[in-house]
Figure (tube, rainbow, N blue to C red):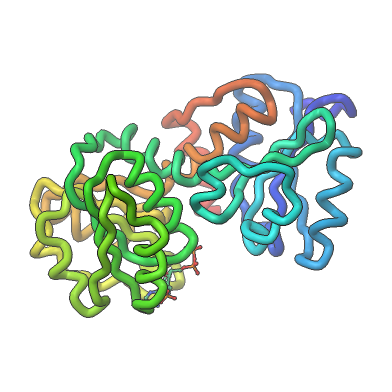
Length: 283
Ligand code: ATR
């Protein structure tokens, strides 16, 4: 990694942010493609956000990734947001142009869709079921609409959160309905895709308990959780014969447009990258 003062600089901002895998992911690509540049970690407290972000242009930053708790609050500081960021209502990538203007993007929907497509999922309309109604669910819904699903059923512990998303995202092309949390298992009938967008099943979190007997056998199951790589949901789905796609690829693919914007090279998601990032998750 080239650390000359003129090399492009990028970073991830958050609070706390030390757990972020982004520096290792971008560091892998910088080394692999032998690109001059650096990608660091910037812990920024919420109250320091405006001041700290304002300084980055003068420190040769070409952009930065954004993680919790700044994904929404950063929006007030931007000069422009792309369609995906506006629809999702959050920004995970900011590009700083030569005049110091800040351009907000959201690459989570792209990352989710690319993970599905490169995992062999063939979109053919029909029905998807989404578990959860938080920030990740918003990106997943935007991706599912773009992938051409005709209808999406949302189910969430807090029904009001699912209702709000259904109202926000329902469109002529895609009907979004909600199913009560206790009826989630029944909502799986006729689905082509089941997505978990909650933290249930993650290391240290409760399991997602969802009987899959109503899910058609040709349905695909995916999880945005990647620690563990095979969540309880994915294991049960695999054992029942479903195609499963783990969540690590979403993390890797969402980073590709960021790396391209920062360092001018479109990077690839390879088995080597997956193995490296996985070793860092476990470390
Ligand atoms: P993110 O931005 O990662 O999606 P979030 O906005 O906090 O995180 O959303 C977390 C999602 O996981 C929500 O759908 C949440 O359900 P609620 O809307 O009822 O809070 C869901 N979730 C988290 N812990 C849960 C639990 N123990 N049981 C059921 N759902 C849970």
